Length: 263
Image (cartoon, rainbow, N blue to C red; front, side, top):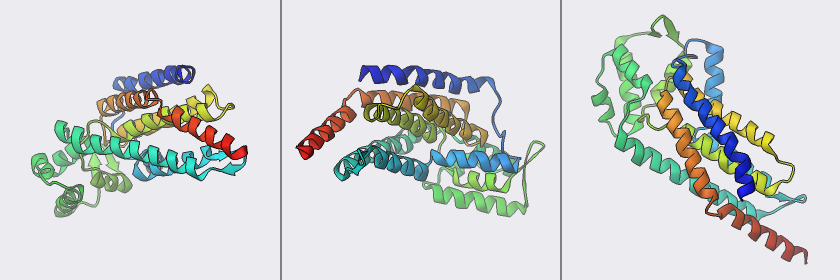
């Protein structure tokens, strides 16, 4: 365990430093006016969303369950159920407890409230995201505006449509929590399962996590603080889960079953 963590941890720390370095750069709304950049960063951000994370976890579970050319159903189900339980649990705590306690408005909602002159308190008094989205649609419809302008930039339609869906609270960034939690756990289980997997594979995984975290600020739906502490929180959870020995136990159990099967 310690040897694998010693490979991941330095890369995780460097990645966190890079995320925290976003405080030194004004990234907000960087991609909202350019169609190509908007499409690019929306694509990246979707990797860390509910559907994207689910697909990644499913593919990871499938990949690590192929052992010597044979698919191990029991191992696949164990890993997928464990992965799902971890990420659903973390998401629920983040979305319905931490965010609801801190109640930090998203930067895109703050800007829309200034632009369209509506009350943040009134919008956030609505309990569901669906109600808030409908509220924003109605506000924008009442202004009869064919476009939204941010300073001297016209916001791309795909961006402000994305903004209309991002009506929850801001802190911490769930995408960043997910991305850095996935990066740590997937890196660990790949190092555990495959002798060919090394630090360069870990670096690749963390580059994806970094892009997901930065995409949230570049799209204007999170602040630098949201993604920085979200990434840190995801890393801490990942370390804690690994040190429970859960994945080592599942792997040893699978190896024992494999030996029993061969004999």
